[in-house]
Length: 321
Ligand code: SAM
Image (cartoon, rainbow, N blue to C red):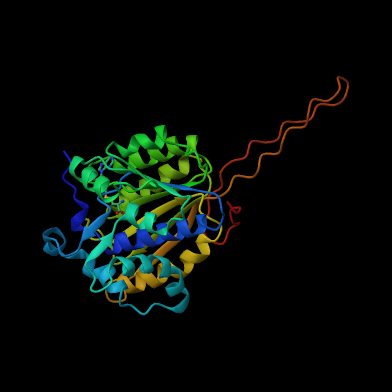
């Protein structure tokens, strides 16, 4: 049973933080001339009418994009947010009425060689998304289970890409499915950039999720969170998180500028905080075993098998990807 409708939440603070990070990832991909692909496993409808009854019922966007659009951010943060806000402004030549979801936002940032593959399981939403992209040769819309794409659709033929996994968290087990999906996806596309969204709501569940990610042994995982108020009991959404696997070399420095600025903007009266830490860093490069020696020469010992390190900010940086 699919009850979740993103139209109620489009443009809220969690969407804005997620979409700014997605924009930074795409901007980095564009620095090389080669084509890349965005695979959006839980795509939504692509464009949201902020004047619709859903968006008006509890207008979450007012405290999200509504705040950002008029905010005076510090200069460096403003510069980093600019490509995202340029898309929002192009969509809204006058008043803010429309909000681009992840597939539409990504598409607006593309060069002619880049492609998107977007999956949406809800039949009505899948149809709406297909209509939005009708005739676009750079987009492929599939009304199917997005979790399957993490196995079947990877690696993309371009061999460069960003995989956004943004499930609705309406059913139990979504955190486990995210870990499982990443393991499958990473096995097929170890050099891909994966961006996994998760809600900060149930503190225990997030703790277990991070532990489970660590125990996968997948290297180069950055955790980025914006917390807008202390956790509540019973749990309510109090922040937004993203795990970025194989983040571009520059992303950590950019997030050091962006996350505090966004936490200040979206946080309840001075309560905004952020978290940025490596939950797994790079595995030491495997040293190639020497070629077999002539019969009488002493045997070379096999190099020790490298293990994933864990740590926090300030420890050695992962290599450029
Ligand atoms: N990524 C979108 C964005 O940022 O604009 C928002 C996506 S929303 C959080 C999650 C979407 O996933 C919903 O539209 C929901 O219908 C869809 N969905 C739920 N289960 C799915 C599945 N197994 N495969 C693909 N889509 C699914």
